[in-house]
Length: 100
Image 1 (cartoon, rainbow, N blue to C red):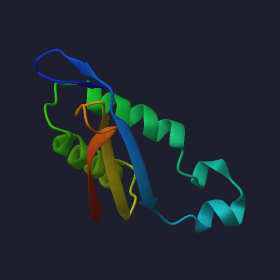
Image 2 (image 1 turned 90 degrees about the vertical axis):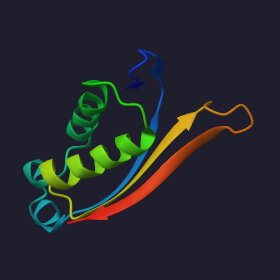
Image 3 (image 1 turned 60 degrees about the vertical axis):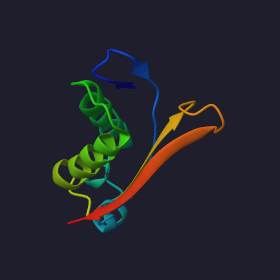
């Protein structure tokens, strides 16, 4: 969910590709060494809804920065789609790649 400065709620779809070292989790089969997708999802929802954002470009950059800084992923590809934004298209969006 995305809220613009105009107080219009709009749905967004995020698609994330992330790179991080999974060896400790795989070697130990221990959840504490894994990246928790629910924690990531909850944090990104909070990030996107905590203040008004006008542009999906801004959403993409903030999401990438959060994943790189807070979750210590080494590389991320963030796709932000805005379904129904244009009458002649199913969805429009942006895609970025960032790394540390």
